[in-house]
Image (tube, rainbow, N blue to C red; front, side):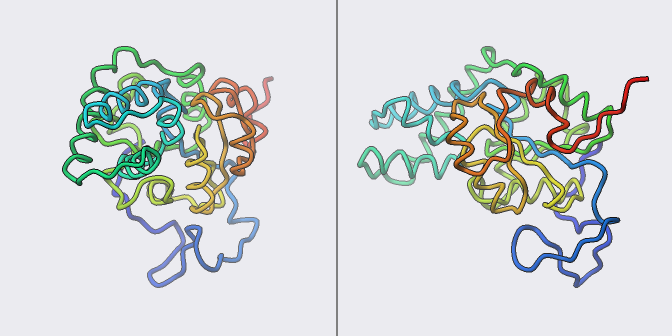
Amino acid sequence: MQQHAIHRRAPGHEEGEHEDCGYGTEMPRTVSDVPDDPAFVFDLDGTLVDSVYQHVMAWQRALDEIGVGLAVWRIHRRIGMSGGLLMQAVLREAGRGVPKDVIDQAKALHGQYYAESLASIHLLPGTTELLQALDELQIRWAIATSGQPEDAQPVLKLLGRDLDSVILIDGAQVPYAKPDPHLFLAAMSELEVNPHDALIVGDSIWDMLAARRAGALGIGVLSGGYSQAELEAAQAFRVYNDPQDLLDHIDELGVRIPRQS
């Protein structure tokens, strides 16, 4: 699978035609428009990789350094947002206002402290098997993460992948990260898939909100620390424990597994 330019019209759409990306009037559909299998767009942290709490602790250290003490659980509730929105939210909860240069300092410190924790980050159960199964079934997939390239790209090594073999959309490639839909829309554009035919897999309510805004179906996993009730309240279609559990029940998502002879 090769990486291509982010912005691309879906197949069959000529210049000037409306392309449905979750906004406005939907194009009429026929049986021939619907692919045999859906495409997948995966969040990264907490969905494929067990790295949520490393991010939480990196943010707590960064906030401590700028004089904003905040309980770990409050930070966790914002993981999955872009760094800018996360800072805005936690500063509001702390009742603090700080200059932009201090916010930028905190974001840089978070990146530094997260990088120091990379050795403790591991794939979640079933991640390798799930992605290999999709490849074998020739089902398209991509990764979309709010993280910056310096955070996301080293994690690809854990997957045994590189930028030439996987579609990766990160927070630096779009104007707004989650809970805005831009990351997922860019990933679906790369995959050349209509949002109606995409499944967005994530571990947070912010993933589910962004999936809804993109016009795609959200699938939750519990491996990022949000509860099943929270993800279902955010309109996750199904909730699984982790990538292995998703793979074990992938037929529930409309993926056809060849029968064994």
